[in-house]
Length: 289
Length: 327
Picture (spheres, each protein chain N blue to C red):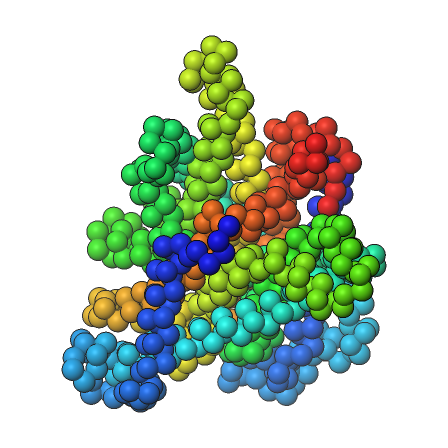
């Protein structure tokens, strides 16, 4: 199997995300408009040469705000995916490697977190310190790292107990080598898929929390918050409301396409599927037979 | 069977404990003076005085030590005493009862709608694409299948509240067919139920499609046809059970989506259910209400998961035979 073969979906996903990244990073460099600068003489304007995407209800430049909203969403996604994948992979590999009480404890913690729907947990964290980016980041990372933990543990467990790794270990190779040679290759694809998937779910989570008005506080141009704020002006300026919705849509679509479960990465799908069906054992037994 | 129930009971207890502890931590670590905040929520920002704040602190026992407080908090929770709302003063249990009926109507109808959309769509596109790949192996997907995929991707690529907004724009603001938000009558249920149902169906129709393809292309299905069953009989007896069980199992995971969707959709459509209560409790810092709604959300989650497990048990003989199964 050629692991470098990239499906069409991924190409589209990568190009969409690159465009958004250019918009997010290019605007402050090239134009540098202040997204919080109000101008009450020019409210709810249509796109013009001066304001490429128009102005909102306070006369703030929409292009600057959308671009900053994208920066907030993308940085949250990057931060949460990075930290949750590191934590989740570490704990997952440790749980599979050590087994015994370490595994039991980690599993207990994971199950405690999983017992509550993710968004409820994130809302509880948001109640802790309202309007805080750090709290949202912590909550989303916590929820995501449990996903990583379960995935990595499930795939690593048979590898660790398998003969290949045992042989390498007996030959005296260090643990780092064992990880790179035996554990990383089978989990690689799924960890990357889950990263794209986790990015989209963290963006959705932040926008959702912003949308019910308990996330970041105004004047922060967070995409979900912008949608609520512009909603009352639907009749006067529908194009303004369409912008954050469209930006959010393209952002999530991009990550979805990137994580697309093509034929090359069927395991993630199968994993989610089996672990919930609680059929896992019977399926495993079937395979053994 | 008993094992399933025990496992789910354990999950419910874990959930209650984590919700209780988290809400407790929240009450203890809220920035600012808790008593002042609650008093402000009750009597309005202008009417708060030190004596009012002290009265609130006395009433809620905010002066006690953290550990003492935690123990009494947990014993109250264990005896299902959820206290009274910090804002309205009404008992949480009564408020939750009112909200629960609304949420159950919304969630039940949404599951029904999603099943009505996902099963025909998934099975049909599965059969079509299986037949297409039999006739001409090169072109993998039929046009219908591609359309269904595009629809699913479109719906899944946005948060559920964006889908709700789009439906509001089309059916409420432009066409003026349905009310935007509210909860007084059947017409008000249509948009929220459609939004939630569509978002659930977007994922499950693909799962149903995939299991249809693998069932229709399987050896046992071909054998059933070869031994003389009509196409319909073979499908009913041999393919359908193998499509339904994995699809139901998958719907179990989707229930997270259902619960999260309920929170968003209820807030969007001003539907007075638990999700609406939860997001408002976060906004108003109504901690007991927050605990009650989060707890009920969690219980709903565990309950529906249990139902999925039990339906697996009833439908799938492999689960029944495999008595000793566990994680």
